[in-house]
Amino acid sequence: MGKPRVIYWFRTDLRLHDSPALKAALDLDPAVLWPIFTWDPHYVYRVKGGVNRWQYLLDCQTDLSESIQKLNSKSKLFVLREAPQTLFPKLFKAWNVTHLVFEKDTDSYARERDKSIIALAEEAGVEVIIRYGRTLWDSDEVIAKHGGKPTMSIAQLQAAGQKVGKIPRPIDALVHLPDPGDMPVDFEQEKPETEPDLNASHRDGSDKSYSSISGPKGDFAIPTLEELGFTETSTTPHRGGETIALKRLEEIISDEEYTATFQKPKTSPAAFEPQSTTLISPMLHFGAISPRLFYWRVQDVVEKYGKGASSPPESLTGQLLFRDMYFAAQAAIGSPFNQTLNNAHCRFIPWHLPSKVEHTETGDNAISGEYHVDSPQAEKWFQRWKAGVTGFPFVDALMRQLRTEGWIHHLGRHMVACFLTRGGCYVHWERGADVFEELLIDHEPACNAGNWQWLSCTAFYSQYYRCYSPIAFGQKWDKEGNFIRKWVPELKNLDAKFIYEPWKASNAALDHAGVSIEGDGLHDKKEGTYPAPMFDFGERRSVCISAMKRAYSIGIYGNDDKVKDGTWKELFEKAGETEMEGHAGSDDDGEYADDADHHRHRGEGAGSKHTRRPSTITNQGPMDRYAKKLKT
Image (cartoon, rainbow, N blue to C red; front, side, top):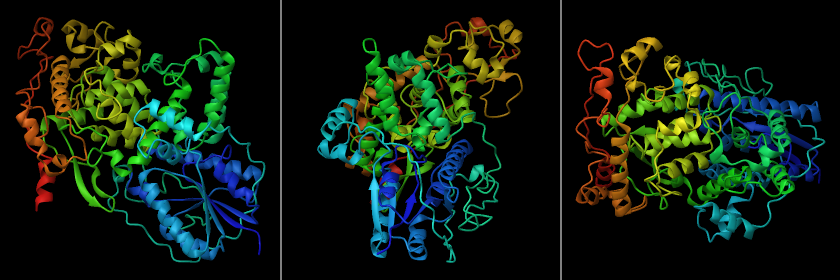
């Protein structure tokens, strides 16, 4: 019997260092080893992703391919353009494969995909080897030690992790790779179904992602943005790849005091050039850096530093524990983890703009990006939030940074998430999660859903009465408003006294700054203008807190039959709730209701060029449509 012929399937582990799965492949002492990446249509068409994240992925792939070539000039990262479910059976036969090796992935789609691939491999007589390496502990082992339950707190994660065992030290870097074998692809390519394409808005219609299995030149090259049909260019300054990740790690570790005493809540969301945190998160997502390597390099510094070092959950290692917590929670709950419906651990709150629902193989699931507009006012607030024109400069600066760079500070994410959900707009957290999925270069399905549940107080965190102020929170970090001046240039010349509340500035101050407060920022936007705030924050915060209090007292979760059949509405109406999907809530948008100085500062006469006009609210109905569907 000859030596093994091994396919190593790269996915979210785009590195050569500390890769238990890649080591397992090399331990087979293979005659040939093919390092491949399958261009999966699920991620190309069914997962929202902006150009910034696509570019970051291509950076990581390019760097990995170059690193492979340095170990073996005959090899590289070979990218094959076909769904793995249809591609692998053909590869197994055409390449005479004996082993398929890959790193475990506990994301919901990945689990289903890998289950299918394992069955196909067994049918073809190919041995499958899987190792975990994406998290500190194997998420499935954590769940087993936690009684089969999701980890809903850091304490639960740590307790279960201790039972699993000590976090393994990283393994040595690779020093060689075998030659790849012949790679015939003289079989028919199965073209994917491209509709619906959740990324269609970023393409110009000339999508050539699947023109041929081996790419336009037949050399299995890494795709380009142009090949993917993207006409936009990446605007993020952040570049990906293992080489950059390892260099960044050395920079962090070299500053022993920063590394040992890091406390996330004390880092500024308004800091830029440089930012106040590590920016390791996108590197972790694509696997350009090993979480175990990062953990132990930091932990060794902490132990050496001794007294005065920070500790989890605020420390650098604590950030990795949060990540493991969300991964294990998702691994336990499955696909419902990313939504409210059918999620036994997510509180049901009757937010505005609820997701549309479809029946799938895994049950009734929210349709990505599709939702009911039960309230035109809430829809307008959502669109203004997404575009960074809420009229609250700190919120707008963060949202514009997100769209441009694909990244914002963790506390900035807290701010804008609270504002959209329980701290102002009362819009469903799934809407915000959709936007982050599209724009973040470090989008991690488990962490994204987990953080939005945390910030909306539907899971993981319950102090709904603690809201971030879009004014005071930014002032805490940046009194002069330099972060706002960078990202909201309309206000760059405004006096610091008004930079967080420009609607309070006098006409003279606005004229001096060359800006007028008018419009909503979405329609007929004029040069030299900045929109009026969407609502009075103090008033909306009170409304939201009262609504959250009633929702908590009712106390139903996403898997409750009342949520599924629509009778939840009777409970909330009986409790006197009006701030919920399908109800109008306030009679107007409440702008300036609490601003006693507004008229004195501004002048509301028809002749004023700074005049504001109140907007109207009209609301209709939503999740009961899902109930009707069940009853028919």
